[in-house]
Length: 116
Length: 114
Image (cartoon, rainbow over all chains, first blue to last red; front, side, top):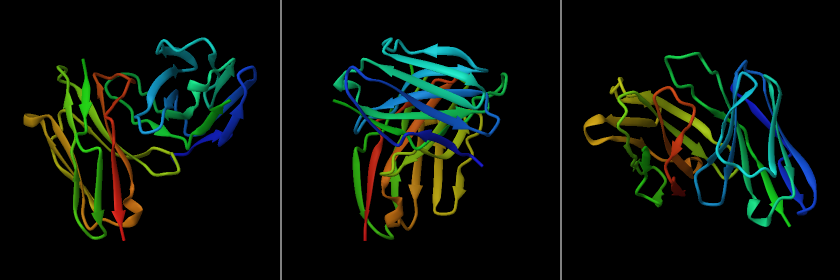
């Protein structure tokens, strides 16, 4: 089973709202990722968590705040977003074997975010 | 620096035609991994294949086949006897060393017409 789930599927929010995106996997993977994808563009990496610790932050604005409460769950907290933040937000996970290989990333269906 | 080029922005074919999607990568690392993902209109990226730099064997999986050539830094993807369900955006991606950071190509939008 290579399933990554994401909720909600769609989200519309105003610029003053606070909302959260949720991602879950039960494959025993120990690395989880957030990507942002604008229309007709490839995904862009935002954050990587390895063993529940933030290992990569690709200079993402502080209005995006990731959280990894446990090895199965990844959240992205949103606050004071701008209309240009409207995009598809994809979560992914990978096994994170220590050394010796690069793991395949398995993606969820994404959350389509619209900021008004 | 690493880079992935997918020169074909959009391709249209008629059902049952064969189609090849090109992927050219750039890296100075000797250890790297290449991936292909499919993104249907629903949005989810579906993993298709992973290949490491030490394994140049071509691979066939049903109607899908991949041709990895280190000499030309290419990792091309062929769909034989295309079907309407193959319509999607296809991304080629590169990861160097044992890193977690994927470099995606710009994608190729494939439309298979009935």
